[in-house]
Structures are given as C-alpha cells and as structure tokens.
Length: 201
Image (cartoon, rainbow, N blue to C red; front, side, top):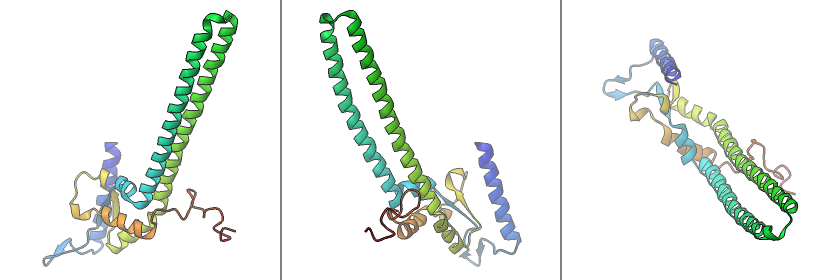
C-alpha cells in the first residue's frame, strides 16, 4: 500500500516539476499567491456529503432496516415453530419426528440463504450507486481542476502532507450538488427512468 502511495506521490511531483519547468509561474510572486499546481480531494466525503451520495446511503440504510425487521419477524415465527415441534415430540413416532425435524432444518437453511442473498443484493445496489456517482462526477472534477489551473488532482488520503488550501473537497461537493443533485433523474445504469422517453405515457 505504501509503495503504491509513494509511486503516486512521485508521479504527482513529476507532473508538478514538468509544469514549472515548462514556464509556469512560481507559487508566490510579489506577494500574490498563484493557483496550486496540485489539488486534493477526499473521495469518501464527496460521496457521503453530496446530495447524490446521501440519497444512495439513505436508500440502502432503509432497505437494510426493512430487511432486519423482516429477519426479526421470521426468527420469531421459526422459534414458535421449533417450540411447537418440540412440544409435539413426545406424542410422535421417532421416524415421523425425525422427518419433521429434518424438514424444519431444511426450511431454516433455505430461509437463511434467501435472507443472506437479500443482504448481498442491498450491498450490491449501494456499490452500484457509488460507482455510478464516481462515473458521473469526472467531468465536474475536471472542470474544477481547469478553473483552478491545476496540473493534477490527487486523492487526499494518499497524500502524506499538504496545505489545507489545496483541498477542494468542499468546492467539489457544492459543484456536484449544483450540476448533478441527488441523481434521481437517471437510473443506476445511467439510463433514463422508464417512461421518461415518451413522457410517461
């Protein structure tokens, strides 16, 4: 991990050196601060604090809470069924009880697999939403880099040390919210929602 981080840092230094050697102005001249050749951004904050990311997180958390409630209901039903089976055991032939017990165990295993699948699906939907978010903000971030006359935009988490002035996370979040918003006008695959093409008719 450190090797990759240092490699990215070395690349950033090389890019900055190239910009300066090509005739770029020094960082400070006659008391005036020039735009930084390097900007940083915190991807986690971009997602967690933007309207788009908050929507994805809220939807996934709501789905997870609903699944937990469903799991609690199923657990209560299975507990009651197991108790009933246990109470009936003394009056049942051994073979019949074993068949009922095996069927119950198979039911429990099937339900557990189904609920685990639902949990994975919720996580996959959240991951897809997050991927869509980062796919859609590329142009927004690029425009910010161009406006700031920077040479490179780095992941803040991979930078060992930097001045706060080069971090543009807050500005990026504001720009993303203004240009993309919560991202509800498109589906997770980037396609318009059903009915949008014909006006919903």
